[in-house]
Image (cartoon, rainbow, N blue to C red; front, top):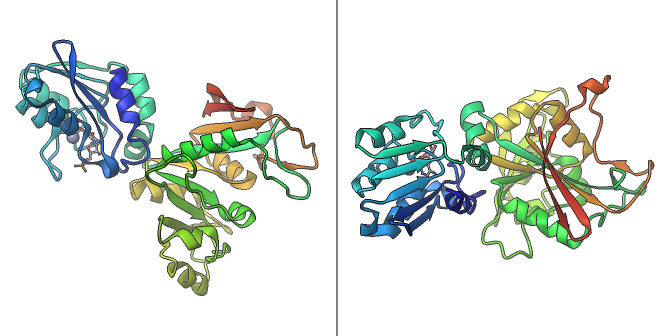
Length: 355
Ligand code: AOF
Ligand code: ZN
Protein backbone atom coordinates (compact mmCIF):
# COMPACT_ATOMS: atom_id res chain seq x y z
CA UNK A 1 0.00 0.00 0.00
CA UNK A 2 2.94 2.35 0.66
CA UNK A 3 4.05 1.74 -2.88
CA UNK A 4 0.52 2.32 -4.20
CA UNK A 5 0.44 5.64 -2.29
CA UNK A 6 3.76 6.67 -3.85
CA UNK A 7 2.42 5.82 -7.32
CA UNK A 8 -0.77 7.76 -6.61
CA UNK A 9 1.29 10.84 -5.74
CA UNK A 10 2.63 10.91 -9.31
CA UNK A 11 -0.79 12.00 -10.49
CA UNK A 12 -1.24 14.89 -8.03
CA UNK A 13 -2.10 18.08 -9.90
CA UNK A 14 -2.95 16.31 -13.13
CA UNK A 15 -6.01 14.14 -12.51
CA UNK A 16 -8.66 16.71 -11.58
CA UNK A 17 -11.64 16.47 -11.34
CA UNK A 18 -10.69 12.90 -10.41
CA UNK A 19 -8.60 11.77 -7.46
CA UNK A 20 -4.99 10.64 -7.93
CA UNK A 21 -5.22 6.92 -7.13
CA UNK A 22 -2.49 4.26 -7.04
CA UNK A 23 -2.78 0.50 -7.54
CA UNK A 24 -0.26 -2.33 -7.08
CA UNK A 25 -1.01 -5.93 -8.05
CA UNK A 26 0.94 -8.66 -6.25
CA UNK A 27 1.01 -12.33 -7.25
CA UNK A 28 2.85 -14.88 -5.09
CA UNK A 29 4.99 -12.17 -3.51
CA UNK A 30 5.91 -10.43 -6.78
CA UNK A 31 4.68 -7.10 -8.05
CA UNK A 32 3.09 -7.85 -11.42
CA UNK A 33 1.30 -4.57 -12.08
CA UNK A 34 1.60 -0.93 -11.10
CA UNK A 35 -0.81 1.81 -12.05
CA UNK A 36 -1.82 5.35 -11.22
CA UNK A 37 -4.61 7.61 -12.44
CA UNK A 38 -3.57 9.16 -15.73
CA UNK A 39 -3.60 12.89 -16.57
CA UNK A 40 -7.13 14.36 -16.80
CA UNK A 41 -8.36 11.47 -14.65
CA UNK A 42 -8.52 8.47 -17.01
CA UNK A 43 -7.66 5.63 -17.36
CA UNK A 44 -8.06 4.84 -13.68
CA UNK A 45 -5.20 3.35 -11.66
CA UNK A 46 -6.65 -0.20 -11.58
CA UNK A 47 -6.92 -0.32 -15.39
CA UNK A 48 -3.27 0.62 -15.80
CA UNK A 49 -2.14 -1.98 -13.25
CA UNK A 50 -4.38 -4.72 -14.68
CA UNK A 51 -3.14 -4.04 -18.21
CA UNK A 52 0.42 -4.40 -17.02
CA UNK A 53 -0.31 -7.57 -15.03
CA UNK A 54 -2.13 -9.32 -17.87
CA UNK A 55 -2.65 -13.02 -17.04
CA UNK A 56 -0.60 -12.63 -13.84
CA UNK A 57 -3.62 -10.86 -12.31
CA UNK A 58 -5.35 -14.23 -11.94
CA UNK A 59 -5.23 -15.22 -8.26
CA UNK A 60 -3.41 -11.99 -7.33
CA UNK A 61 -3.97 -9.31 -4.66
CA UNK A 62 -4.69 -5.71 -5.66
CA UNK A 63 -3.74 -2.84 -3.34
CA UNK A 64 -5.69 0.33 -4.12
CA UNK A 65 -5.51 3.71 -2.39
CA UNK A 66 -9.24 4.33 -2.97
CA UNK A 67 -12.27 2.09 -3.26
CA UNK A 68 -12.50 0.87 -6.90
CA UNK A 69 -15.25 2.66 -8.80
CA UNK A 70 -18.65 1.07 -9.33
CA UNK A 71 -20.16 3.34 -11.99
CA UNK A 72 -20.32 3.13 -15.75
CA UNK A 73 -18.51 6.17 -17.11
CA UNK A 74 -16.64 6.15 -20.41
CA UNK A 75 -15.56 2.61 -19.48
CA UNK A 76 -16.98 -0.10 -17.20
CA UNK A 77 -16.35 0.02 -13.43
CA UNK A 78 -12.90 -0.84 -12.03
CA UNK A 79 -14.60 -3.21 -9.56
CA UNK A 80 -15.86 -5.25 -12.55
CA UNK A 81 -12.43 -5.13 -14.20
CA UNK A 82 -10.77 -6.51 -11.05
CA UNK A 83 -13.37 -9.29 -10.84
CA UNK A 84 -13.05 -10.14 -14.56
CA UNK A 85 -9.25 -10.30 -14.31
CA UNK A 86 -9.49 -12.98 -11.61
CA UNK A 87 -8.14 -10.92 -8.68
CA UNK A 88 -8.89 -12.91 -5.50
CA UNK A 89 -8.03 -10.35 -2.82
CA UNK A 90 -8.36 -6.57 -2.67
CA UNK A 91 -6.85 -4.30 -0.02
CA UNK A 92 -8.27 -0.79 -0.14
CA UNK A 93 -7.24 2.25 1.89
CA UNK A 94 -10.59 4.04 2.03
CA UNK A 95 -14.16 4.36 0.78
CA UNK A 96 -14.77 6.66 -2.19
CA UNK A 97 -17.26 9.38 -1.09
CA UNK A 98 -18.36 9.99 -4.70
CA UNK A 99 -22.13 9.32 -4.58
CA UNK A 100 -21.80 7.08 -7.66
CA UNK A 101 -19.46 4.81 -5.69
CA UNK A 102 -19.66 5.25 -1.85
CA UNK A 103 -19.41 1.62 -0.78
CA UNK A 104 -20.83 0.09 -3.95
CA UNK A 105 -17.40 -0.78 -5.34
CA UNK A 106 -16.49 -2.66 -2.18
CA UNK A 107 -19.88 -4.40 -2.15
CA UNK A 108 -19.43 -5.56 -5.76
CA UNK A 109 -16.06 -7.11 -4.89
CA UNK A 110 -17.50 -8.89 -1.83
CA UNK A 111 -20.48 -10.17 -3.79
CA UNK A 112 -18.07 -11.71 -6.32
CA UNK A 113 -16.38 -13.65 -3.53
CA UNK A 114 -13.23 -11.50 -3.41
CA UNK A 115 -11.59 -11.25 0.00
CA UNK A 116 -11.60 -7.56 0.93
CA UNK A 117 -9.61 -5.65 3.55
CA UNK A 118 -10.53 -2.00 4.01
CA UNK A 119 -8.78 0.91 5.69
CA UNK A 120 -5.09 0.01 5.30
CA UNK A 121 -3.01 3.24 5.56
CA UNK A 122 -6.26 5.19 5.58
CA UNK A 123 -4.75 8.33 7.17
CA UNK A 124 -2.02 8.60 4.52
CA UNK A 125 -4.54 7.96 1.74
CA UNK A 126 -6.86 10.65 3.10
CA UNK A 127 -3.99 13.15 3.17
CA UNK A 128 -3.06 12.31 -0.40
CA UNK A 129 -6.64 12.50 -1.65
CA UNK A 130 -7.59 15.50 0.52
CA UNK A 131 -8.37 17.60 -2.55
CA UNK A 132 -10.78 15.14 -4.11
CA UNK A 133 -12.37 14.32 -0.73
CA UNK A 134 -12.98 18.00 0.01
CA UNK A 135 -14.40 18.72 -3.43
CA UNK A 136 -16.85 15.81 -3.20
CA UNK A 137 -17.89 16.20 0.44
CA UNK A 138 -17.79 20.02 0.88
CA UNK A 139 -17.97 21.43 -2.64
CA UNK A 140 -14.68 23.29 -2.04
CA UNK A 141 -11.10 22.73 -3.16
CA UNK A 142 -8.30 21.84 -0.74
CA UNK A 143 -6.10 24.93 -0.47
CA UNK A 144 -2.49 25.48 0.46
CA UNK A 145 -1.36 29.02 1.21
CA UNK A 146 2.30 29.51 0.34
CA UNK A 147 4.08 32.37 2.08
CA UNK A 148 7.75 33.34 2.02
CA UNK A 149 9.08 35.80 4.58
CA UNK A 150 12.05 36.90 6.64
CA UNK A 151 12.63 35.75 10.21
CA UNK A 152 10.60 38.77 11.33
CA UNK A 153 7.71 38.03 8.98
CA UNK A 154 8.41 40.66 6.29
CA UNK A 155 8.04 40.20 2.54
CA UNK A 156 9.44 43.52 1.27
CA UNK A 157 11.39 46.57 2.43
CA UNK A 158 9.76 49.97 2.93
CA UNK A 159 10.69 50.82 -0.68
CA UNK A 160 8.95 47.69 -1.94
CA UNK A 161 12.07 45.67 -2.72
CA UNK A 162 11.29 41.97 -2.48
CA UNK A 163 13.55 40.12 -4.93
CA UNK A 164 14.76 37.85 -3.51
CA UNK A 165 13.97 37.02 0.09
CA UNK A 166 14.32 33.26 -0.23
CA UNK A 167 17.11 31.53 -2.15
CA UNK A 168 17.10 29.54 -5.40
CA UNK A 169 16.52 26.15 -3.71
CA UNK A 170 13.36 27.42 -2.01
CA UNK A 171 12.16 28.96 -5.24
CA UNK A 172 12.64 25.67 -7.05
CA UNK A 173 10.71 23.94 -4.26
CA UNK A 174 7.84 26.37 -4.90
CA UNK A 175 7.87 25.54 -8.60
CA UNK A 176 7.76 21.82 -7.76
CA UNK A 177 4.88 22.51 -5.36
CA UNK A 178 2.97 24.22 -8.19
CA UNK A 179 3.12 21.00 -10.18
CA UNK A 180 1.38 18.93 -7.51
CA UNK A 181 -1.55 21.36 -7.50
CA UNK A 182 -4.33 21.63 -10.08
CA UNK A 183 -4.03 25.39 -10.09
CA UNK A 184 -2.01 28.28 -8.74
CA UNK A 185 -4.03 31.28 -7.61
CA UNK A 186 -3.01 34.86 -7.01
CA UNK A 187 -4.58 38.24 -6.34
CA UNK A 188 -4.76 41.28 -8.53
CA UNK A 189 -2.55 43.24 -6.06
CA UNK A 190 0.24 40.64 -6.30
CA UNK A 191 -0.16 40.31 -10.05
CA UNK A 192 0.17 44.07 -10.49
CA UNK A 193 3.16 44.32 -8.13
CA UNK A 194 5.16 41.33 -9.43
CA UNK A 195 3.81 40.56 -12.93
CA UNK A 196 4.20 36.83 -12.19
CA UNK A 197 3.69 34.13 -14.78
CA UNK A 198 3.06 31.39 -12.18
CA UNK A 199 4.46 28.58 -14.30
CA UNK A 200 6.83 25.87 -13.07
CA UNK A 201 10.23 26.60 -14.60
CA UNK A 202 13.74 25.14 -14.58
CA UNK A 203 12.71 21.79 -13.12
CA UNK A 204 11.93 19.81 -16.26
CA UNK A 205 8.15 20.14 -15.91
CA UNK A 206 6.13 18.24 -18.49
CA UNK A 207 2.93 20.10 -17.76
CA UNK A 208 1.83 23.40 -16.23
CA UNK A 209 -0.79 24.07 -13.58
CA UNK A 210 -3.83 26.12 -14.43
CA UNK A 211 -3.32 29.77 -13.42
CA UNK A 212 -6.07 31.69 -11.65
CA UNK A 213 -6.27 35.41 -10.97
CA UNK A 214 -8.79 36.96 -8.58
CA UNK A 215 -9.39 40.47 -9.89
CA UNK A 216 -12.85 41.86 -9.04
CA UNK A 217 -12.69 44.87 -11.38
CA UNK A 218 -10.07 43.59 -13.84
CA UNK A 219 -7.35 46.06 -12.85
CA UNK A 220 -4.52 43.79 -13.98
CA UNK A 221 -3.36 44.48 -17.52
CA UNK A 222 -4.00 41.88 -20.24
CA UNK A 223 -0.58 42.94 -21.54
CA UNK A 224 1.06 41.22 -18.58
CA UNK A 225 2.93 37.92 -18.38
CA UNK A 226 -0.33 36.15 -17.47
CA UNK A 227 -2.21 37.75 -20.36
CA UNK A 228 0.57 37.20 -22.90
CA UNK A 229 0.97 33.51 -22.04
CA UNK A 230 -2.76 32.69 -21.66
CA UNK A 231 -2.97 31.16 -25.13
CA UNK A 232 -0.23 28.60 -24.29
CA UNK A 233 -1.11 27.83 -20.67
CA UNK A 234 -4.68 28.40 -19.50
CA UNK A 235 -5.55 31.35 -17.28
CA UNK A 236 -8.89 31.78 -15.52
CA UNK A 237 -9.85 35.25 -14.37
CA UNK A 238 -12.43 35.60 -11.61
CA UNK A 239 -14.14 38.98 -11.45
CA UNK A 240 -17.41 40.56 -10.34
CA UNK A 241 -20.20 42.32 -12.22
CA UNK A 242 -18.30 45.57 -11.56
CA UNK A 243 -15.63 44.65 -14.15
CA UNK A 244 -15.79 47.19 -17.04
CA UNK A 245 -16.86 45.78 -20.42
CA UNK A 246 -13.73 47.08 -22.17
CA UNK A 247 -11.44 45.24 -19.75
CA UNK A 248 -13.49 42.06 -20.18
CA UNK A 249 -13.13 42.06 -23.91
CA UNK A 250 -9.42 42.92 -23.76
CA UNK A 251 -8.86 39.91 -21.50
CA UNK A 252 -11.06 37.68 -23.64
CA UNK A 253 -8.84 38.49 -26.61
CA UNK A 254 -5.91 36.84 -24.77
CA UNK A 255 -7.94 33.57 -24.60
CA UNK A 256 -8.28 33.91 -20.83
CA UNK A 257 -11.43 32.34 -19.42
CA UNK A 258 -13.54 34.87 -17.49
CA UNK A 259 -15.77 33.72 -14.64
CA UNK A 260 -18.13 36.13 -12.92
CA UNK A 261 -18.45 35.72 -9.16
CA UNK A 262 -20.93 37.45 -6.80
CA UNK A 263 -19.46 40.47 -5.03
CA UNK A 264 -19.07 41.05 -1.34
CA UNK A 265 -18.78 44.83 -1.01
CA UNK A 266 -15.94 45.96 -3.31
CA UNK A 267 -14.39 42.47 -3.34
CA UNK A 268 -15.13 39.08 -4.77
CA UNK A 269 -17.04 36.82 -2.42
CA UNK A 270 -14.18 34.45 -1.69
CA UNK A 271 -16.30 31.52 -0.58
CA UNK A 272 -18.37 31.81 -3.77
CA UNK A 273 -15.15 32.01 -5.80
CA UNK A 274 -13.81 28.79 -4.30
CA UNK A 275 -17.19 27.05 -4.62
CA UNK A 276 -17.24 27.90 -8.26
CA UNK A 277 -13.68 26.56 -8.73
CA UNK A 278 -14.66 23.27 -7.06
CA UNK A 279 -17.74 23.02 -9.26
CA UNK A 280 -15.40 23.36 -12.25
CA UNK A 281 -13.64 20.26 -10.90
CA UNK A 282 -10.59 21.75 -9.17
CA UNK A 283 -9.40 19.76 -6.17
CA UNK A 284 -6.05 21.26 -5.08
CA UNK A 285 -5.20 24.95 -5.25
CA UNK A 286 -1.91 26.60 -4.30
CA UNK A 287 -2.38 30.22 -3.26
CA UNK A 288 0.53 32.56 -3.85
CA UNK A 289 -0.68 35.98 -2.87
CA UNK A 290 0.16 38.96 -0.73
CA UNK A 291 -0.85 39.71 2.84
CA UNK A 292 -4.34 41.06 2.24
CA UNK A 293 -5.72 38.13 0.28
CA UNK A 294 -3.86 35.69 2.55
CA UNK A 295 -5.46 37.24 5.64
CA UNK A 296 -8.91 37.44 4.03
CA UNK A 297 -8.75 33.75 3.13
CA UNK A 298 -7.74 32.79 6.66
CA UNK A 299 -10.57 34.93 8.06
CA UNK A 300 -13.02 33.23 5.70
CA UNK A 301 -11.73 29.82 6.84
CA UNK A 302 -10.76 28.92 3.28
CA UNK A 303 -7.19 27.76 3.95
CA UNK A 304 -6.47 24.10 4.70
CA UNK A 305 -2.71 24.22 4.81
CA UNK A 306 0.04 26.80 5.19
CA UNK A 307 3.45 26.31 3.54
CA UNK A 308 5.74 28.94 5.05
CA UNK A 309 9.24 29.53 3.74
CA UNK A 310 11.38 31.41 6.24
CA UNK A 311 14.61 33.09 5.13
CA UNK A 312 17.46 34.06 7.42
CA UNK A 313 17.07 37.81 7.00
CA UNK A 314 15.61 40.67 9.03
CA UNK A 315 13.85 43.72 7.59
CA UNK A 316 12.25 45.34 10.62
CA UNK A 317 8.90 46.93 11.30
CA UNK A 318 9.12 49.36 8.37
CA UNK A 319 8.94 46.40 5.95
CA UNK A 320 5.70 44.91 4.58
CA UNK A 321 4.12 42.24 6.81
CA UNK A 322 3.52 38.78 5.36
CA UNK A 323 -0.09 38.83 6.60
CA UNK A 324 -2.76 41.56 6.59
CA UNK A 325 -5.17 42.15 9.48
CA UNK A 326 -6.99 39.14 10.93
CA UNK A 327 -9.29 41.30 13.07
CA UNK A 328 -8.45 39.48 16.29
CA UNK A 329 -9.36 40.93 19.64
CA UNK A 330 -8.39 38.00 21.87
CA UNK A 331 -5.42 35.69 21.73
CA UNK A 332 -7.79 32.81 22.28
CA UNK A 333 -9.24 33.59 18.82
CA UNK A 334 -5.86 33.23 17.09
CA UNK A 335 -5.84 30.47 14.47
CA UNK A 336 -3.48 27.71 15.66
CA UNK A 337 -2.59 25.48 12.75
CA UNK A 338 -0.74 22.29 13.60
CA UNK A 339 2.83 21.66 12.44
CA UNK A 340 2.87 18.73 9.99
CA UNK A 341 6.31 18.90 8.36
CA UNK A 342 9.56 20.82 8.22
CA UNK A 343 12.23 20.79 5.54
CA UNK A 344 15.29 22.86 4.68
CA UNK A 345 15.81 24.17 1.16
CA UNK A 346 19.27 25.66 0.90
CA UNK A 347 19.44 28.33 3.61
CA UNK A 348 15.65 28.54 3.96
CA UNK A 349 13.27 26.57 6.13
CA UNK A 350 9.88 25.30 4.98
CA UNK A 351 7.31 24.56 7.65
CA UNK A 352 3.92 23.11 6.78
CA UNK A 353 0.91 23.66 8.98
CA UNK A 354 -2.63 22.27 8.82
CA UNK A 355 -5.62 24.36 9.87
C1 AOF B 1 -10.98 4.40 -9.44
N1 AOF B 1 -9.68 4.50 -9.84
O1 AOF B 1 -7.92 5.70 -10.52
C2 AOF B 1 -9.89 6.86 -9.97
C3 AOF B 1 -11.23 6.73 -9.49
O2 AOF B 1 -15.45 10.29 -14.65
P1 AOF B 1 -14.96 8.90 -14.41
O3 AOF B 1 -15.81 7.84 -15.01
O4 AOF B 1 -13.48 8.76 -14.70
O5 AOF B 1 -15.10 8.64 -12.84
C4 AOF B 1 -14.56 9.52 -11.91
C5 AOF B 1 -14.79 8.98 -10.54
O6 AOF B 1 -14.09 7.74 -10.38
C6 AOF B 1 -14.25 9.89 -9.46
O7 AOF B 1 -15.19 10.84 -9.03
C7 AOF B 1 -13.94 8.89 -8.34
O8 AOF B 1 -15.12 8.54 -7.67
C8 AOF B 1 -13.45 7.70 -9.12
N2 AOF B 1 -12.01 7.82 -9.32
N3 AOF B 1 -11.70 5.50 -9.22
O9 AOF B 1 -11.49 3.29 -9.28
C9 AOF B 1 -9.11 5.67 -10.13
N4 AOF B 1 -9.36 8.07 -10.28
ZN1 ZN C 1 -12.31 3.19 -11.73
